[in-house]
Amino acid sequence: MDATVSEHQATALRIITEQLSEATSARKCHGCGCFHKSVEALAATDVGTKDLVWLLSEARGKFTSKQYDCLGCPTCYPAIAANAFSEAFPQEGAGMDLCPLEEPQQRSGWPRLPGDYHVVRYNAPVAVCVLNSERLASHLQVMKPDGLAIAGTLCTENLGIERIIQNTLSNPNIRFLILCGEEARQAVGHLPGQSLKSLFDNGIDDRGRIRGAMGRRSVLKNVTPEQVNAFCKQITLVPAIGTEDGDTIARMIQECARRDPGPYQNPLMGNEVLMIKADEQGGLILDPAGYFVVYPDQRKDRLVVEHYSNAGVLDSVIEGNTSGAICSSIIERQLISRLDHAAYVGRELARAERALQTGERFVQDRASGELPSVPEVKPCGWSSSCGDIQ
Image (cartoon, rainbow, N blue to C red; front, side, top):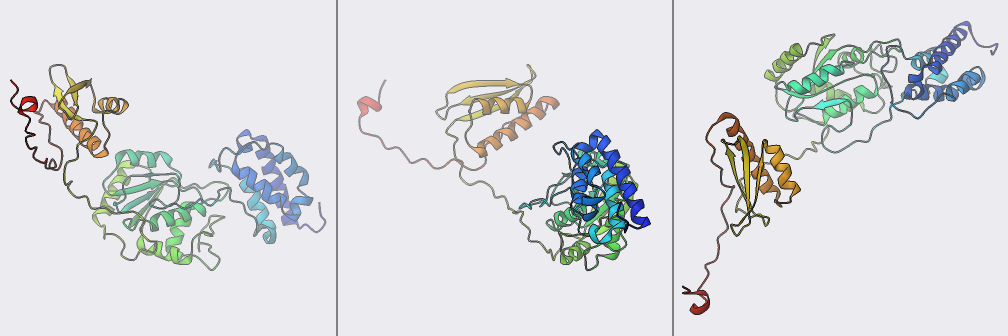
């Protein structure tokens, strides 16, 4: 070991050795981005090329193809090693790129960035960050409480928070963020929940570090100060870290929805979601593939669809127990060719299925619009061939 290494640095090197040895022995680490990224980052330092050469070489020998960026393990050996290095060798540690997550490609529309979330509806005012409680996010997606726009996890105090900021700014309807679920406090020092709350309380400094955040990597590199300020102005944070009961969170969502001030009037990002006002259809356009007669057969307890050519000739009868099964048969046999016609048939099948279940009377609605006017056909004058034939 280099004679210039201080006692504090020697202690850090022992911790690094212990933790990377644990990761090298743990099969789950071999395909993990945390392990790969930490080893490569350490190998690029002066200390890595001297005191850690043998250790990093052994670790690299265990690498397999990356299967995941981060498993969120209660104890992350590579991250502990990297944190110990950053504290003991701050000059080299400051330039290390330790996060295994790559900056994602932005998309048009909403949500702008991919992530571990469930989208419920665009026009709702409440987003829910469940931290490390993925089951809670899935539960809320199934419940769909009134007012919920999106629910997702947050495992990192840097890229994770950046994605929340950008996805929120791309939807001016979101005005509340409920911060709940289990905090991902682990030996690695990840505290995304505390870091996110600190962002609202204290903002960021000139380097992008969240003031007062206890997370080791709470530096926002991929959002601007203007975006951070706009996010904090648009959103009211509702802190509930530790709360994991779905019914409780659902009540909080509904309470926020009752206080919805409406879409944010000064959005920083342009709204790329196209809002379309639906108009009633004008003239009815016949489907070249023909038309359908839909009805529930209560005696057979089945749905029935009769398909006719536009000349009024019946060519197919489809029977089934559900509207979905019949729709699949119609598509498979190419009995429909227009999307507006498909939407109409699907709607009528749903009504017929409900009538079959409840016993209520069913009358098929006519399609929207009116048939186009048909020009009057004048007599051709050849009575013997197309006129008065007996």
